[in-house]
Amino acid sequence: MFLKVIFAIGGKKKMAKIAQTAVKYLIHANIEIDGTVDKPDMIGAIFGQTEGLLGSELELRELQRSGRIGRIEVEHEIKAGKTFGSITIPSSLDKAETAIVGASLETIQRIGPCNAKIKVTKVEDVRVSKRTQVVSRAKELLRELMDSSMPDSAELAQEVAESVRVMEIIELTTDRLPAGPGVQDSDQIIIVEGRADVINLLKHGIKNAVAMNGTSVPQGIIDLCKGKEAIAFVDGDRGGDLILRELLAVAEVDFVTKAPDGKEVEEIQMKEIHKALRSKIPAEQAREEFAHAKPLPKTRLGAVSERRPAREEREAPKEMHARSSSRIRLSDEEKSTFKGLLSELVGTRGASILDAEMNVLGKIPVTELASTIKSLSSGIYAIVFDGSVDRDIAETAEKAHVKYLIAMESKVRPVNARVTILTEKDLV
Image 1 (spheres, rainbow, N blue to C red):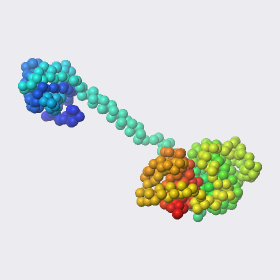
Image 2: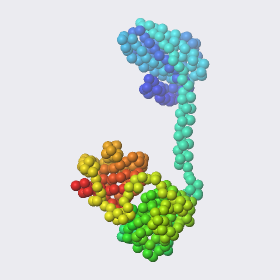
Image 3: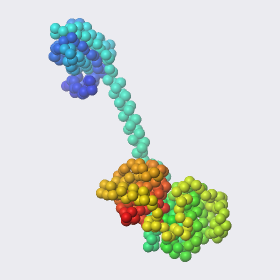
Image 4: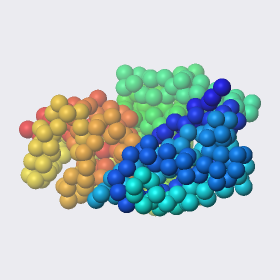
């Protein structure tokens, strides 16, 4: 029986027949002929001129007949009246016998009427190549196995618990405020800034948090504070201070606390959450400190952070309720640029990203908008896109300090977002 084996010769795949014993070596040789000859002439010369040279045991015809030498492959081309090519001979002989067969090729000096020169370039150990391939593939398989290995019971339990907690998020009041499932039944509520804050608290087992969903205090929050003990838990930056001022001014908050300096509630861990809640202070003390224009104590409310300068430009608390896209002042250049880009994008489902000089940094599909904003994280002044602003895009833009979001329409009210949202009608 014969086994078909694939050999690579000159970048092409060739097929040779060899006995059931596997190929061990490949003899590679180059050939140069001072004239024009065909492939049968070259193969005939190899068999004819080596006949009787090495004795009956290493006779090429006998070796090929017994399957210890495979089919001789020859590739050639003719240039300027000369023939150039390569010879490949598969062998299942041992090292010494294979080397002898290879050396015998170099004794050929004529092919047909033409002078010829054959040079063996190398004898390749096929098993080394296979071994290298086996090791490489084994590494890939091991890596895949480690990546997909089963987590331990503790990790499984934690993963299931966290997923269930995230699924438990509900919406309260007509303002559709994101909240944990324990808000309605609990005598105490924790007021946070956004949906991501509620999710983070849920992951760590706190189910009585409710989000304001923006910088303005919705009526639903005011109503909830009337019948429950309310703790305001805001981010550890200047934006958190501004929100806290307004919350204290319009709602019956009992205690206040902040995330660690420079951090947001959505990104802190369980230890930091519990430490912040234990360090809460009475709302009256916070009101008094705000009234005397004193910085909030670092040991409890955290020092004012300058980490997000975009928040420093927000409106004063008295202006927050009145904020709307119709009252935003745009320069003629900004308005013209935004309007032109939005018109160009109609029907494309694309988005243009601009810097502070109103230069277009790039254009991307709307489906990649959120991931692109996260990867850039800063340096984006405005985003114009063919689509609708939803809560996820608005929150992602807020974190990246984007100033303007310009779209065909918006599902988020401008007063409930920390980024300025403009739609097509705002640019008329």
